[in-house]
Image (cartoon, rainbow, N blue to C red; front, top):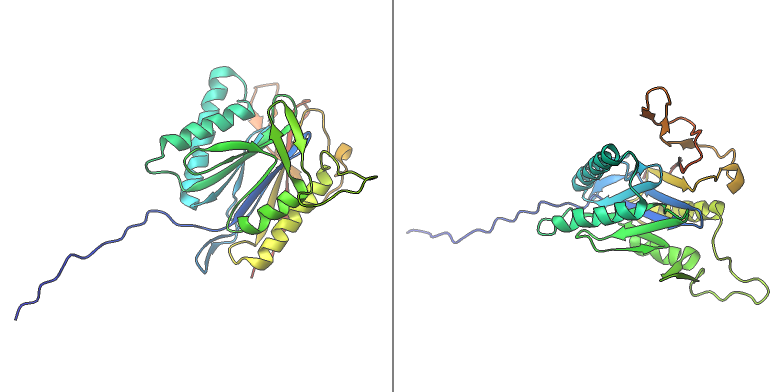
Amino acid sequence: MSHTVGPVARDFNPYSDNGGTILAIAGEDFAVVAGDTRQSEGYNIQTRYAPKVFRLTDKAVLAVNGFAADGNMFVKKVKQRLEWYRHAHGKDMQLRAIARMIQTMLYAKRFFPYYVYNILGGIEEDGSGAVYSFDPVGSYEREACRAAGAAQSLVQPFLDNQASLLFQERTECSIYFKNQTPSIDAPFPRHLPLSHVLSIVTDSFTSATERHIEVGDGLEIYIILAKGKTLSGLGLDGVKGLSEVTSTVDDSDGSASEGETSLADGERIFVLRRELKKD
């Protein structure tokens, strides 16, 4: 007696979700971009230190989340494009131009997209802080704050409640503390101070770590300051775990290096590292 075997389907999925969460908040003259360092797949932790936030220039920082392999490759290609621009024009690309470049790079791969959600934060030409959020196929917009990743549904409502702005053409309409009613004699501030924003970021990741298994281990917070701004002037002088990653130019040969104090009156980038729960 013969048995016939029907067709057998072979499923192939080139993507994987490696967990983690990223967020960014724009201030009046600064931007903050943060992400945790856990990389996981399902219930398995692949590594406890996989950075999700990367410095692009002295005024731009990119956070990526989703499929780790696609994210690492995409960051590599973005940095390569920025290096080509720097060699061709002798200067760094502006933030809004970087956002547009990222949009075209993502849209060009729309038929086999990078499975990554990108958040770009930094300083615009006018010295204001800005945040751009992207979906995997290139749709993007400028926002005041944005979260992405495994704990987005937990973090984004908290950011909307605490640090949200509504950007409109030529004007900015403040909607800080969404769903809260200010008192008559003490209206809500138009822009939150940097120290308050850092507290919001820390609280966001601490809460997300307690409630989501794909978030945890470590926290990296990148702080981008506009020209002429200092940590002491923003009330952050002496904060532990804070280090500068601004590129500085050596006048002797024009080479750039990281980890030194910037002597030029330009934008500056600092990174603040904190520990999160590891269970």
